[in-house]
Length: 166
Length: 384
Image 1: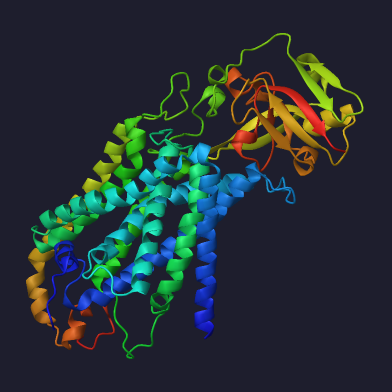
Image 2: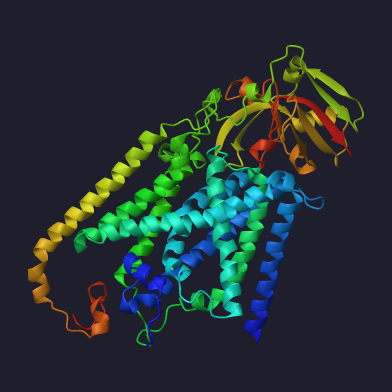
């Protein structure tokens, strides 16, 4: 009962906030251009759902073919690289620069992004190398401490000191 | 079990969102990311409202002038936090993406409504982050005025978020640590790794931009649209004198009019002859960057006292600028009584450059940069 009442209050509050926002957009239509706003509002979701995620799924499919030890570091590097690139893109394009104002977008963003991406790539390469080396050494060690714990623990036991298999 | 055509399953398999037993873990990943997003959007909504109401104060509210760096902090958190939220939001949408294609699309009227309300949440969250990012990059490909659209959309997103949280609360409660043995599930390496990767992406975005407002990390602000120390007199500029259409005028005088005991018309030499004060205050822009500088000039309260303005008066500071949304600003009593509030004449030891408001500009503590009016022509006093 208490939970239900809490929910109804939340629904009421949420609906009220949505109403305030919608009414404000319409009231200030001269500035918000509701039709143009809707294009961007819905467009953001559509571009994300129909273009961005399928593209990322494609990359996931490709990186899925990598040998298991390399897959993780490569994917992590790609996620980091894509994130900083997405945020930096408007700066790199520099479309907001204005003649006469040298303090607006003052940096060499393309070069800076290249440096950041280079560092990410370097870290990824180090991780891959470390994993490859560890993999070559591992078989002997695995044989010595073979896990005998129940199936549902097995995946996790190497990271759990409390696992009874030790 | 009856096999239905389920596109979600195919997507799940491709993205390796889960394998056999991991469905529930994906749910927990999504819940953790949801908690982080809930915190992030709450902070963004709150700091955004602070910024809005500082610029458009409702009649009953008066903003304090201290702490001097408060607005710098709230707006820095708003913008840099917003940038760092971009990878977080994309990660959350990635983990729940297969559900978009679940078959059948709706199971009941309630389910249809629940799904329909996800649209303003997703569309709105993406809209806020994309338009916010474009705005700080001064890139305006959209047909609406950014500030107004971003402001009203915030209510829609936050309302949809409140409804969403009410629907998903049970899953968040399920995240509390359980007693060992009683069905405790270890966080698999894959979930922990995914969450750590997302945290790393958010941190990296923050690290490469936060220096535009947090000066000690200024050297790391490689991807930030501003850099403290870069600009005329080592301070960034948002509107140049040329863009404002203002030219230095040797016959310039500062007029003080309105509800005053005696109107004043002060040439620059008279202002310079008044007691001079030096303050260190930041320009804190609504776009999130901020930079501290050393300002010297006359206290606004000294000028207003000389004109005989009442203690409760409100002052309108008008610029030489002919038009524009920010050609004038209001200064309420807490701000003009504050000894840090100056009619600045010098910046970093030199007379103001034209781009910083020569001959005279306002500089006050805890105040958005757009309200630090440049090229002051008149002070109009209202009330007593």
